[in-house]
Image (tube, rainbow, N blue to C red; front, side, top):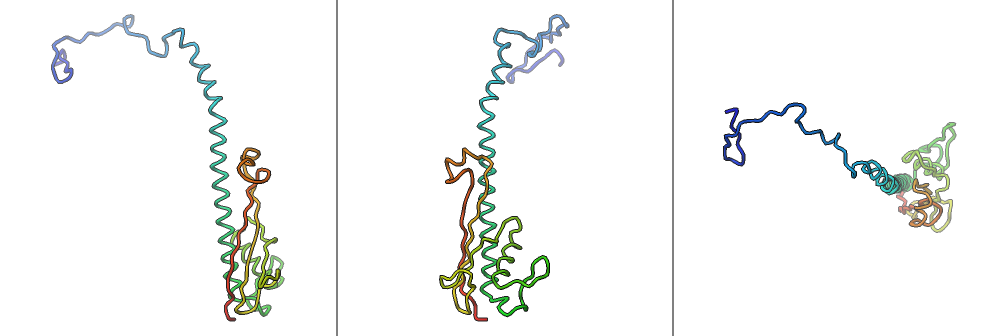
Length: 185
């Protein structure tokens, strides 16, 4: 059976031929040709051409992901702060009011900002606008409509190239806003 080989389902009765070390073909890595000398340089040039595009695409994906995550996080924080505002908590200090890091009781608007800050710790909600009835700085009475608005600015990794797609100098600016009707409290 050692001398038989099956090729394509048909058996061949040719004996196996063993080659000596001198007769064995050279491995492909040791063969030299005129074309083989240029393969290393060609690979380096191709790598140099593809690398910037690959890095830009990777940074663009990261930028898009960060921008989307930031916008969803801020929107969720505003939604939670709006719900807190609509329930009328902290309307009669100090019951139901939040406190700052020093233990000071915050006003109703300060409590609303603090609630948003607790929901999205990496963002700054000090510029958040709370308005009711078109009056800024007013959280409204029971039954009134309260609106929370904030504008955030996220720096992008792709920098100057991203400024071609986003207005500004390589930053993603967005505004998030929620509107609630205050509950009777």
